[in-house]
Structures are given as C-alpha cells and as structure tokens.
Figure 1: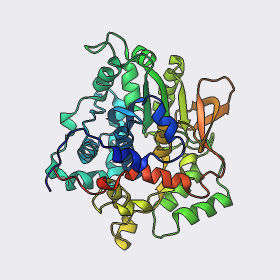
Figure 2 (figure 1 turned 180 degrees about the vertical axis):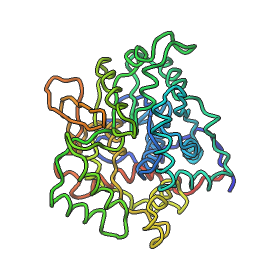
Figure 3 (figure 1 turned 30 degrees about the vertical axis):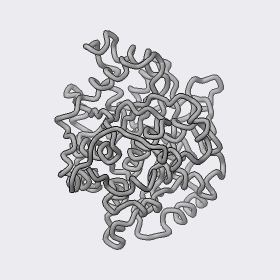
Length: 399
C-alpha cells in the first residue's frame, strides 16, 4: 500500500458534505476556535472516530486544529495519530507524554496501558496495517510539554481551547513546566495567559442506573449481539454516577492525579466545560461506519476492539457511546438545539470520583443533552456524518 501525500488541502465539497445540522450556520459565521486536542487512542472506539471528526472540522474551518497530544505510553498511538494525518492530508503537529520525572506514571500507568492495549489492540493493529506509510514514531515526535508551550506561546491571549478527552497527565506536566525558549512564563502562567477555556470529557455526573436505563442500553447496544460495548456501557453506568465510583478518564489508573490537576486549574480561573460519561451513553454511534472501507482506521477501531463480535461478524462496526464526539461538537458549534449548560462546580477525589454541584455564577459549566433530543437518533446521525465526512475520504488516499 503506497503512502499518500501528506499535504494540507481542502475543497468546497467537504463543507457541503458535513455542514448540515443544528449549529452549523453559526459555526461558520464565527471565527474558528484554535484547538489543542489532548487524549488517548483506545481502548474506546470513540477515540478513533473523534480523530476523524477533528480532521473534518479542521478541513471545513469549523476549528483550527493546532496540535494533537497523546496521553498514553503505548507507542503505536503516535503512529495511529499520524496515519489519520496522512489519510486526511494534514500536517497537524503531534506531541506525546514523555515526562520521565513522573514516577506515578511509570508505576501505575505503564503497566495498566500494556494490559489495556493487549486486550483492546486496535491501535497496534492499525499501526501495523499502515506500517508501509512510515508514520511518525514515538521517538520522532516531541514531548507534549515542549509542543504545548510552543503552540500556546504563538497564539493570542485567551484564544486557545484545550479539549481533553483522556487522562490529564499532559496537563499536569504542562502546569509543572518552567520557562523555556518558547516562553519565559511558567506552565501555569502560560495556560492562564493563552487558554480561553477547557472542554473536558471527564467525570461522571449522572444519576444511578435504573431499569429504564438498562432497557435503553439493551435496545441501543444489545440489539445486534454480540457487542462488547453493551455490557461495558452497563457496567460503567452501574459503577459510576454523581459522587459514586470513577469515570475512566478521571480514574486514570493514577491516585490523586485528577484531583491535583483540577485543584490547580481551579486556582488559575480558566473556564471549564465538563462533559460527563452519562451524556455519551445516550448517543450510540457506529453502525454507519460500515460504509467506510474495511481498513479505514475508524472502522478498524470499532471492530478490532470488539473481539467477540469480530469473530462472529468480521469487520462489522457496532454501536458505542459517542463520549468525545459530543464534546467536540459542542466545542465547534456551541449548544445549538442539542445541548444545555448549567453553571456549577466539579469536585474530584483522589480515586477520581467526581461530584457536580450546581452553582449559579460559577465560571465552569456542565454540558447536558436536551431531554429527549436523541430519541429520533438525529444527534447520532449528525455525529456519524461529522466522523465520516465526504465519501471521497471513505477509502484510503492514493499517494
């Protein structure tokens, strides 16, 4: 398989292909937000679909994607991020966590990541499949802190949106950083000066699971068995709600990490929008991705990480919650007809347990779906369109 040319480009067809949907007109009227995306790549399939959605929104000038930061020690993650760059013809800078002074990361995160990516190997499988493209490797990309500081220093004050859709290892390292060639400011001061807001898919702020919730999950995720994302969704709701348990990104396999980062961010005063896991459960997405080529990295992310299903239904993508995609949709297009926001405060414990308290006048807010807004699957369909983009991108580019 020949590698594609890795050059930026665009065409008007891209805009018409996925500009429809509530909020699109407003998004095109306002300046595209400058975005740094910070997240993991797997094990959840939504990580792969969100990468595609980032590229499509960047292509249509709904966002200005400055850089992508990886959180995990899994080396194939960097290669996968660059495979997406090459697939869509962009040169988005890539950084990844390389802070060798963080002993907690070495102690807790490295072994947990090894287990996770062995059980859910889509990142490794995609990187191996596209090895002939010679994507950038872990060794070839800069430390996330170095790239963060360079990107932030070059932007206007309070102009950057940082979207986190993973664990906050990079944010901790950035806040701990000192002056360098890019900026004389400390990491904390650089964030205070350059970042206008955070949009963060982290935490669990919903109510405990009910029989009605279980019936919904069975209908939406268990309707085409086997689908591992059905029991995973049920188990996540059963184990995490407002003030109970810990959502995956907040838990982070790292005691005290999330709590410590938010204590520092709260002191900085940069506004934060929280998107809890309970919102993603109500936006099942994925079946439309079977229209993509069988080796499209999005489709691969869905079927490779659904091993039992892949044995019975090879190469078939099945529904998974659109956790990160709805956060990105809000970032790009605002509330539109789909979302509400409520002012308040999120508190995190050492374990990652999160508690939301409404507080009028707070600088922070929680994003929620308008009740019943996806009963007709209109939000699901919009997310899937934004992930898939124009049909010309459904197969691998010819270099």
